Image (cartoon, rainbow, N blue to C red; front, side, top):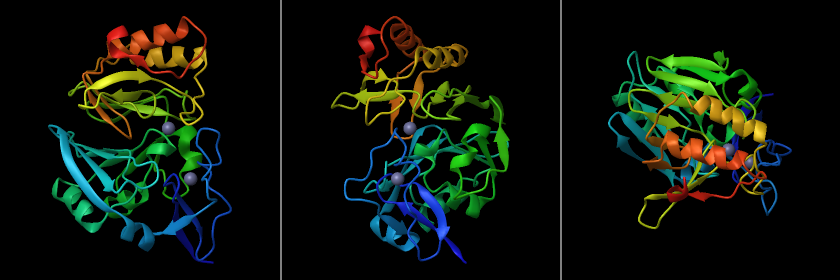
Length: 276
Ligand SMILES: [Zn+2]
Ligand SMILES: [Zn+2]
């Protein structure tokens, strides 16, 4: 029976399933860390997703571009393209890529290595694999979520994806959840290890961390301690999550947040940056 890719319209996660049949459910939305779709399951094939969105892209830092969908689809992740020695690295993925967006990536030299933090940032990673044939590097505990594409390099807890770009397993929010550290740009591609809230003028206002965002499920103290151990060695001044870019959120802010969380009962509440 032929297979096809189909996307959950609620979270955007791509599934590989029997052509013409609807998957029985979405593994991301069925998980406690996501909400269930209020109107029941709905899956869209490639043509339907393509008709629903266009792509936008821009440069956020020198050599760091983000590709998004407009209007947002699913959880609305942005796929980051990072210029690196030995070839570009892509981290996280937009929910869908039209030929013009793939052409933009091609014009910048394509993708040598492709990775993501966890399923909420996976987007249409399968399209990037089909087009550019990069190494696909995913933490070994996250491989079970990758049915729509093929992991070529299961990673252990620390993995150099490219010179100066290192994947670090942090766990906590999700099995296999990993952050990508860009030492040259002092930037952390933090996945959902940090959630940033913003002022109306776009400046970052507060940060938080969570096991599950929709139901505000906090991390355990042990999970926060793991984040702290990893972040302590990674000085940064820029944070990229699958959903936001925050200039000026630093390692100092993150470590102060973790210390605060370790000093009280678990919470997913945001803490204002000026208190950190
Ligand atoms: Zn879903
Ligand atoms: Zn997440």
